[in-house]
Image (tube, rainbow, N blue to C red; front, top):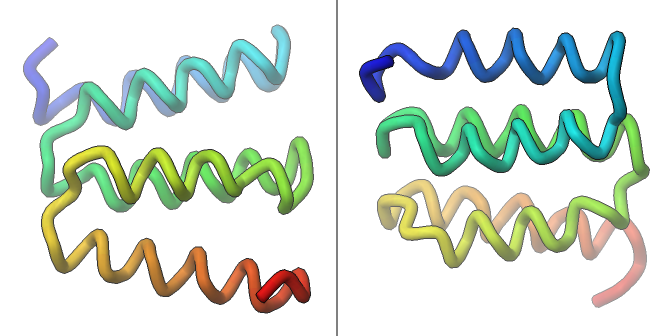
Length: 96
């Protein structure tokens, strides 16, 4: 599928894994999706990935996803947004 049209497919696939498969597999699908979507959709895909990981595994599990997002080559404005969200997470956990 063209890169600009894969996001809905990955989201549906991940939802299928969450409902009928393993959460670990769903997280792999979200991870693959962050690499497959175009740059203008990467931030929203990472936000979905982080939200689902927090819901399924808990907030501390999201640390590695934030770090991956920051180092993934997002556009500068998106990296700034992701860094601020990561800093807010660390502050909310009391780990400054």
